[in-house]
Image 1: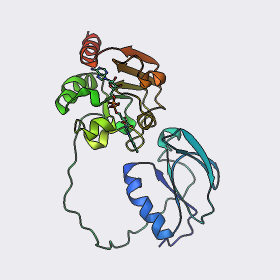
Image 2: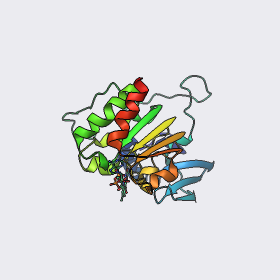
Image 3: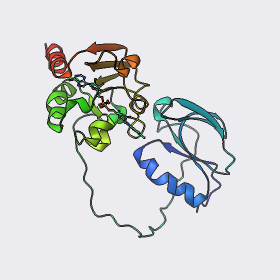
Image 4: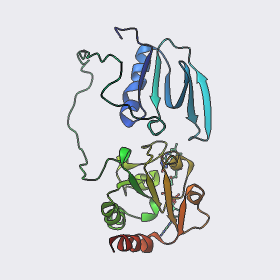
Length: 234
Ligand SMILES: Cc1cc2nc3c(=O)[nH]c(=O)nc-3n(C[C@H](O)[C@H](O)[C@H](O)COP(=O)(O)OP(=O)(O)OC[C@H]3O[C@@H](n4cnc5c(N)ncnc54)[C@H](O)[C@@H]3O)c2cc1C
């Protein structure tokens, strides 16, 4: 239980917080308010529902407000300066209900998806894990981008889970987002719609992704991506 009189506990809306904050909410017997887009006042929040298609303004009457926030809509605060007192707490002993066996971390020299300036995401249209690497990696590495994927590509085993962009993946807001063979489903758009410039490459001129793109190229990605990479190199 909390020893202090906290009023608000908040964390970035990430895989990590989505794992432990529901349990904190259960222990405290309060609601968890996820993916807050705007803090309206000290207990009124705007949050996204239906994959971001509806914004709901809600008021919490819980004594402790437990929130996860949509990071791309909030400025990161500096670690230095500021008036807030930083208190170091001792970690209570673990309950030993679970034990740590091992971890497998995918190490990469590429920038982290969450704060990369350029993100290039591939869709199911890549067709295989090999194509994901063979077609997208040269361009990704040439421009120093992070690699992203749609859920369909992840579910098909073409890309690892941690690079999924979208409602049930990572939310990104880079300077440049390139959607390669991505249809533009609501759940994917939710994870990249705050990107500054969006480029879409799709062989279907009616693909939904073009509605969200600043620049669109109707082309076969297997021709377009190597060609773009060649031009950038030149
Ligand atoms: C509860 C829920 C949560 C979800 N969460 C997410 C999420 O977090 N992220 C996410 O991405 N999705 C999510 N989805 C899935 C989402 O609804 C879509 O199914 C998914 O985004 C589609 O992925 P895709 O665009 O790769 O595949 P597809 O829909 O198969 O689209 C492939 C696109 O590639 C184009 N294409 C095909 N061949 C080529 C080619 N050779 N060159 C160029 N273009 C080509 C096609 O025209 C098409 O537009 C979620 C779904 C649900 C129900």
